[in-house]
Image (cartoon, rainbow, N blue to C red; front, side):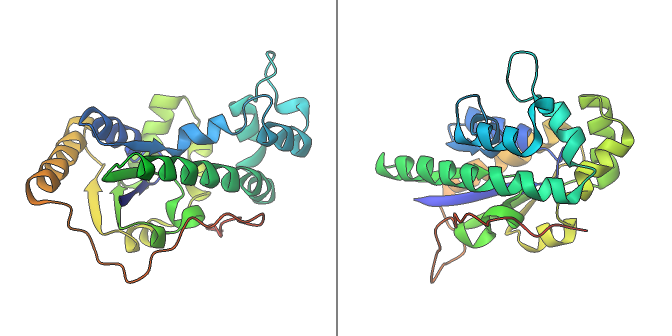
Length: 223
């Protein structure tokens, strides 16, 4: 089975691209969704997050208040490291489980949409890596206008991720996410049309590695 890594900075367009791939019949695992699932009430991830950050990050219904948690961790690199040390191994393990199930079903390709692909999973576990690129200023505007963040909150989110040049260095293919959603969808359409017409031709791998799941799998981030 061909494993494709799809990544990009926050608000670069991963959700748009992932949704379009799914519409075209491509199997996509969205790691943003997995990150939410592994901290639902009753899960080990939920218990670990509440223990680490107290019940102050809970909403009235007992679920984790993502806005409150973000306000706690993104201005504080140590707190963010602590949160990622809890969540990332759980998310990667679940992604691996879904990957194994897809392979057992006889799927020919799976796209793993991972915000922190370079930091947390590693490009070496994929047969090809697609990076969606958009300037930081464009992404800040999207976060402010589309998600109601302040400019400082938006920059905190971007600064918590790896540098754009590091992410781009891992790319086998770059999609331009700086324009409209329709423009990005057209790039997705062209890629899917190309692989369906010409076959799956990706970079050769003399040796692939599995997802690395360890208790101390905390990524190195931009400081």
